[in-house]
Length: 235
Length: 316
Image (cartoon, rainbow over all chains, first blue to last red; front, side, top):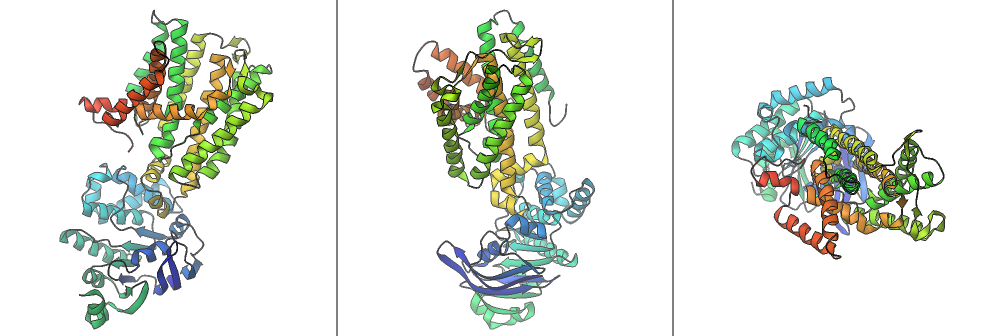
């Protein structure tokens, strides 16, 4: 579904990614692990079209993403849950959710209602807060909203950047359950996480990044047991 | 009443419509009220850009001036229909706004402000130094436009009601716009452009659209101005006029629509009152602005919240 081959990217004259290659197959949940500053977020930004790779290819379902704008990539069915739960604080929960619908080709009232029902089925707490401004939500609720927003868009591939960062254990469990549920619904997930324990408990496979390159790839079980994981991530 | 139009807005509109019935409303005060409503409406249309989308335009005077020139040129040549003047203003301002917004919205922050300013200065210089349109004197002594062939808008009272209708219509347009999905996207863009992009929004297209709407509303306001003043001069397009529009928005309260209307009216009245006593009136206005920015960052509309009457709620 998503294939990156020999991707080099960076900010201005500073290179960050050095020939990254990875693949996420349809229906999979794949973890991208690594310490801070290893290029994980840069990889996400490059996949979403915010950074243009200097070299290499990025394909989503056979479509070349390297020349597309972020909004065009979103409309292909790629959703991003950014780090730090970046919702729109000045808008209500409902307005945040409805903005998520933009990436859907069909934006009819019927689809909006159906998607809202689905989202509320998974996140009943958001229904309780439907008319509250985003800024009044707790950190965990904001994360729920950020995930629900890409569900509204009907994204087929969701890129999640550190979704459990700074959350209480109860919310971390909830996010983990949500990722499992997304998998069950057939949504493909690429999960960037520092919390390897959480990521490997829900993902099928994983990659470890170090200094802008993929240094290890294995199934979640192998990663959990491999000494490389302990060496590179300290867990 | 509903999400778009509140009872309070209707009551205020009716009271403003009854204003000319007050005994002290001489021609002078009617013209002053005209200016207050006109610049209030223009500040409101600028609020769509500054308050809702986070785009600071330093070139709105050009939209206003081009609207005024469109009307003045037609009136001078004997085309007296107000409707023809409005159509001409919409076409001229619309075309200019398309060009400006295409280039300006490709850049963010200070670059957007600078590009709008530069474009406006080009238009100002063109009218200032081109004798075809009267050079620095502009077009003077134009006849009054006509609403219908036998109905000239030739009295302060008629002008007052025309500008009131314009304000009401502009307010409705802005209210519908900010309550719509389009309006929510504008707020999303203001909060974070990149976030709006990865949700699938073509941000530049939205910015261009709101620039165009704001410019057209301002241009229509400009088109009404020669009917009241009988002239259009390049000075209407000076960058200081654009600065005054921004000050009006700031005084009233960003992202509120009603606030900038109050801000525009307040600015006009303050300018008139202070300038009748001293020449250096802009110093006083500057001081008032400093006080408002420092102590009332939510503008005049935020006073209600400060006094505890109502929780201030801008679309922010």
